[in-house]
Structure formats: structure tokens, C-alpha cells
Length: 76
Image (cartoon, rainbow, N blue to C red; front, top):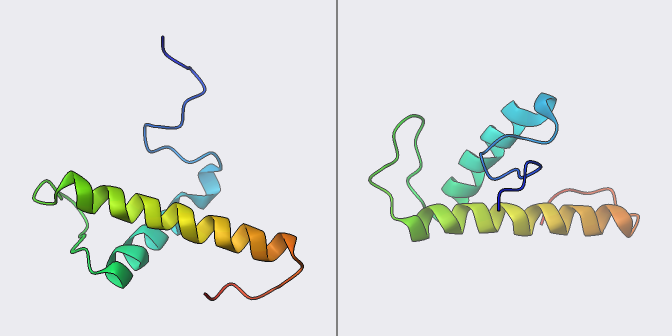
């Protein structure tokens, strides 16, 4: 069964954030040592790609937790 509300196609929930999310992806990849580049990345393993996505989620959750705790810094 397909969920029409799924965000698994790479679309952002907030279209205005697309460029920032794209930049964030490259920053995270650089930070963890994954050689992500603009354009074709078929030479990367699914593990490398998954690690980038997983680390992005981790950092976004940490940022939200800091915001909920009343902290204003965004650095880890």
C-alpha cells in the first residue's frame, strides 16, 4: 500500500528550505568524510548514502531538542 503523504521521494516538507537542506547534506557529508558531490553519486555505497541521511536526522533532532530546552546555539 502506498502512502500519498510519504516524503521518501526527496521532497522537502517546506519547499523554501530545499536549498538549505541541500547545503546541509553536503556539510554533513564533508563532516563525516563521505565524498558526496553535486550531480551523479552512483559510485557511493548505499551505506555511505545512508550514513549521510542518518547523521542529518541526528543533527536535526539535536537542534530541535536544544530549541525545546530553550538553548539558542546551533553548534554541536
